[in-house]
Image (tube, rainbow, N blue to C red):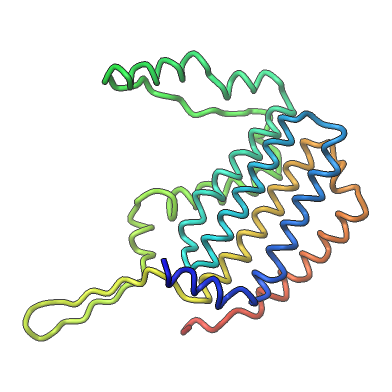
Length: 237
């Protein structure tokens, strides 16, 4: 934990953390201020949940644990999809809640029984939405490579094996990853959350993207993220 804290101090002045993440944080605040007067508290609360997931993921990345940020980021994608689904069709609220089925599952657990299967929720209204399709690809990648214990996740662990000459092997696993990986994930996180904000903008009837202040923030983000993508440490670091 001390090593994680030290890693956060060392990287605090990197532009990914000193500029890019605060910029996306401000974009969240701006979106909330623009949408609050015209839209339901429920949509506002969903936006704040995504904002929280962004900040938690950023704190994991700067501490050197970028792979652990994907569960939060994947959940943020889910939140944005639900928000837009609610906006498109109010009946999706009940489809998502499934109150009777969920209560039966909790009752079964209390009785020591196996809960009945909870089917996945589909929102046909979002099937052809380009904003959602863009994020859906990440959703699947995160599931296969980062969120669950899969062969892909195991293969991504940075380790080395050194024979000692006596038939034994010394195994070292790097708990904290390279600076390149950390900074790459920071940029990826910010890009995903900007796209998540665009999904919320659709749920907010475009009130966010039409605002002049938001346009400046978005243009600044696009320019900064492009510049930072060219300025990553070499692969050997």
